[in-house]
Amino acid sequence: GAGVSQSPSNKVTEKGKDVELRCDPISGHTALYWYRQSLGQGLEFLIYFQGNSAPDKSGLPSDRFSAERTGGSVSTLTIQRTQQEDSAVYLCASSFSLPLFGPTDTQYFGPGTRLTVL
Amino acid sequence: AQKITQTQPGMFVQEKEAVTLDCTYDTSDPSYGLFWYKQPSSGEMIFLIYQGSYDQQNATEGRYSLNFQKARKSANLVISASQLGDSAMYFCAITPDYKLSFGAGTTVTVRA
Image (cartoon, rainbow over all chains, first blue to last red; front, side, top):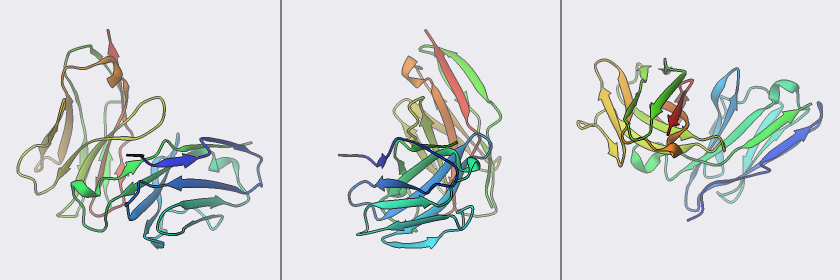
C-alpha cells in the first residue's frame, strides 16, 4: 500500500513569508507525528496528533509554528514569518495506534520536506 | 527524559561482511521501545527493527538483528552480509510512549 507522503518535497522561501507543509499518512493510521531534522539539532519531535486532536505540542519551537489535522487524515504544518533558523527537513510519520507502544506502533516516515529560508 | 548515544559517526564495511552499529541509551522509564531506522541519501527514514524493553529475545528482521543488553542499556544493530544498498545513515531511537528520541546517527559506507 501507499506510504506516508509529504508535499512539497522542497520549498525555498524568503525570510518573513509563511509556509505550509502537508502530510498524508498511511491509510488507517490514527496517530500522526511531525519531526524536524537539522544539522545542528539532529532529529527533534515537534507535535503529535491522535485523530484530529494534538495532545502534545511540546516540541513546537515557537508560536510561529502551528499544525492541524482534518478528517483524521491529512495534516498541515504552518510556519509563519519564517526565519533562517527554520531551515531544516520536516519529517512526518504515522502509526497505527497510540498510546500503547509495540510493533504495531512503529512510526513510518514520509520522505520529508526540505525547507530553505533565504 | 531519554538520551541516545551513537558513538560511531562513520563506518566502512566490505560488501558481504557483517557490521555492528553501537547504541547506548539512558532512560528512567521502566518500559520503553527501541527502534532502528535507516536514512539513505534520498532522505526517507526507513524502519528496520524494534525491540521492546521487556522482550526476552533479541529482535531479528532478515539481515538485521539487535543485540539488546538491558542491564548495560545497549541496543546494537548488526547488519549481516552487507550490500551496497545498505550505504546510509542509521539512527537508533527510543520512546517510552510515542515521542521518539534519536541518536546522532552513524553513516555506513559499504565498499565493493
